[in-house]
Image (cartoon, rainbow, N blue to C red; front, side):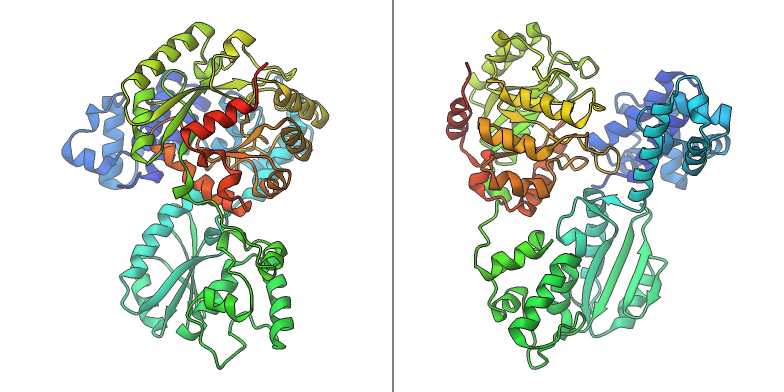
Length: 569
């Protein structure tokens, strides 16, 4: 079952455009809520429309059902088309620029006639935005910087958003008789957090027949043995055809980054005395059967695809020093998940049962703390009530241990947002920054280090604050943060939410070098997103993490013993 991402996008756009238009906020939110429900519940709206059951979904009123039914039957929503004829759809992107939002976008649209990102950029350059009430020279500067990031991100996609399309194409290629072998290559195979395209390599002796088959499905652009097209989800796809004899060689070369391939090419020539040829295997008397055979031939240890980013992989492979990397089956603990006690969609019991069904031994419930009013954060009284519920669930022996955690806000001064008598009641405290992102680098660094120093902090949550393709990391000296975690023996989170994947893999490598343990956490707000933890595992592998680097790999008893060893005064 696949969620219709195009419909979800349309519903979210309607919600924002209605706010820009000045419509009732509850009316607008109905569309945003519908999009959230479709995604979180993985609803197959086409099937629900066919069965006449769409109106049974809570929050789906008559008007919404009518529009979704129209979409299923015709592929469009006339209400949306009329709305976008009145209000430019690119204004939706402008609302996502930090410090703007729908109300200020409406102001820019009505006072300066801003319709596009380029219009806004020029207005900032001409110093027009700073003169509008509600803006300033500082906010204008921030907007200009944000626009530069948006333009740099243009054409990029979240890795996870491309996997559904990649799976569809994978199935398609398996059904083409003339395809002998095929594989993802490039950024997708390396599990890069952001990708520019879905890239497949295909082994075949019948190029034209493969092309003919694909032309029945997509509008192809042909360039020799390279096929490109865009999907309905606006994801760029490249399919490269090759003869079987060159398949393994190209599989390797198209997977690695430019830095990695440059290092590999240098080593190849030194080892074989043959010039490196990207397209064809230079040792013409040899037909490779696997990448393992290629590495063995060159006296290199096998390099997993995730590590093929730079010369470090070649250096370690020469030394036979590539470790056994962490894998999904190593994980035992599901850490940092939210429930309906704060802003989660499911109850604690539902989250626990879902984690158990995925094979986990224990789950750490970490709802938002009292400062997070926007997320229904827990006041001390509700913390006590929640702990009673957890005790009751654990007494039932439901097949998974439930630990009492919290995601405590790091306040601007670096303190946590509960008194000590409350903090000491938690099994696990994840400390996270959720506000005051615009501090100077020194201020933010001091703030986070002070939180790490707290005897009640166990794990630093989403340490850089980045939201991929949406928000840059806040200004912070991340190496100093990692050094502090090392000095005070604290854990750093690898937030596995695919919109975050925070800590960046380059810094994971440094954390490992400093002996800092990592927690791979999904930061889930519903049962479906618990599996985000597996994106985190792939990303952890890019950071060279082994099972003994990851606290989730500890058993329930080992984890509690380790957490308690961090100490509370």
